[in-house]
Length: 194
Image (tube, rainbow, N blue to C red; front, top):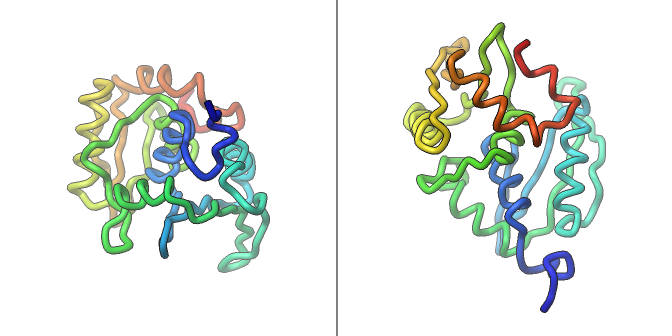
């Protein structure tokens, strides 16, 4: 039987799938022609996260992560996967008319939550935020429902300037941290409330 590692054109492991979902809930992007590709693109300050995601998906990537000058002097650090059928399935779930959306069958594993938090989470005093401003209010309500249905994590929507984002209620912060901490890279502990 062929192992997953040998099957670079075929299958993703469950761990890889959960990482991809976490990336797509955050800043992960996709493009498609015949098949889709995944782009992981962050500030160079997030290099450790990009490198970590790359180590888990490297067999699907042609070129290792590289620095690149972005808008306004920003230095980006990024990589893209090859265009493959395994990514097309994610594209069909997470994108509609080239716009990112939340799939109704979304599963939030602890690893997915940790990747999402490292990518797009932050703290404010005793609270934890997930920067979901890119999603519609309806999609944010769906995310809140998934967090409660799957993990009994209570959340609210807080206005951040012009947009809303998800705030994990103080009463659920310890539960959330307990779920993600086994998967959290130490470099991201600064995002946890004390």
